[in-house]
Image (cartoon, rainbow, N blue to C red; front, side):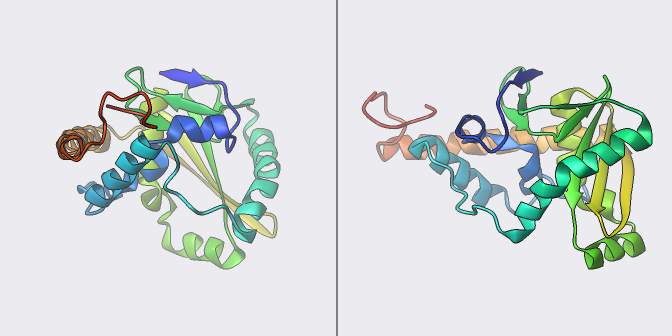
Length: 215
C-alpha cells in the first residue's frame, strides 16, 4: 500500500486517478452481486482515453447534491468519531504497491478500518432503512477500498442532519475480493489488447512530443 499525500479533488489528486482503476468505479469491473460487470469494455475505453490525453474523461463538476455532501462530510465524521470514540485520519489517495488500483477513502479509522461517508436526501435514507441494501449497493467500492488499504473493516455512513444516520460495518469479504482480482486481471489483459490495437493507429508511440501517460 502506498499513501499519496494529496488533497482530494485537487489537480494532483485528479492526476493520480487518471487512467487507473479506482474503488469508486469498481462496479464497472465487478457488480455488487459478484458477477463480472457488463460495463468493463466501456470503462476501459475511458481509462485508455485518459492515458492518451492526460485529461479526465469525467465532465461532471458537481451540483447542489455534491456540494451538500462536502458541506456535511466533516459534520458526519465528527458524529461518527464521537459515537465510536475513535480518531479519524484524512487521506488523499492510496494505491496498491504495484500502482494498478487506487482509492480515496474518506477517513482511516484506527489501524484496521476505513470510513466512507455518503450523504442522502431524507427519502433516500428512508428507502435504505426499509430495504437494508446499503451494504450491497456499495459492496464493490467497499471491498476494493479494503483491498487497496490493506484493512479489514469498512464503516459506511449514510448521513443527513434531518434524519437518524445509517451506519453499517462491512468486514473484508475474501470470496468477493478473490473474484474482484480475477476480473481485474481479465480487465488488464483486455486493456493490453486494446493498447496493441491503438499502437497500430499511432497511439502510445515512443514520442515525447505526444501527451501520453502510458505506453
